[in-house]
Length: 170
Image 1: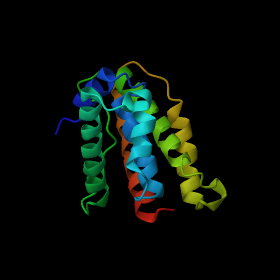
Image 2 (image 1 turned 90 degrees about the horizontal axis):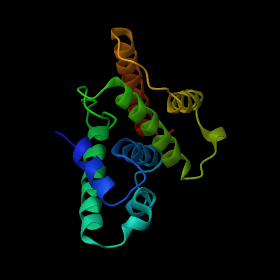
Image 3 (image 1 turned 180 degrees about the vertical axis):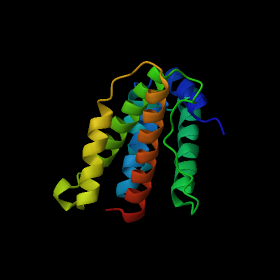
Image 4 (image 1 turned 60 degrees about the vertical axis):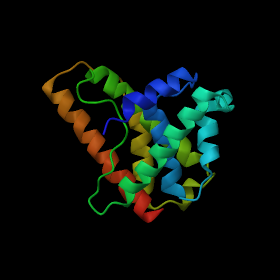
């Protein structure tokens, strides 16, 4: 199901400063800490001033609500269906790498919104958060077979880390 580009376009239309990747990262960070977070909190951070009730903002909010439900379904699937919301593989590696860094920034931001202390995290979770910080600083690279493989491995690592984090709620 194509979700990334329609959501990305909707976010642009309402003037959000975030793209679909960063938006999804924030959502996943929040979900990994608590499933009972306020959806309005997430939407407020994503849409900012655009969250006033006009037609475009309302449509975007509906899309965000659907993305939240879809993401929860993925995270709760016994088939490990969760995937970070990133551009399709047909998009240039440079753009996908940049979106991956933004996704990780969003995840860290969402995770931090709950004001939990890092001291309370398990060692594995601390390592995962450190890795997410590193990936959030990733620099776009030129396309090569090795870089493409490295990108896929990082995405897979993040997928597994988020699922583990969500399952354990640390």
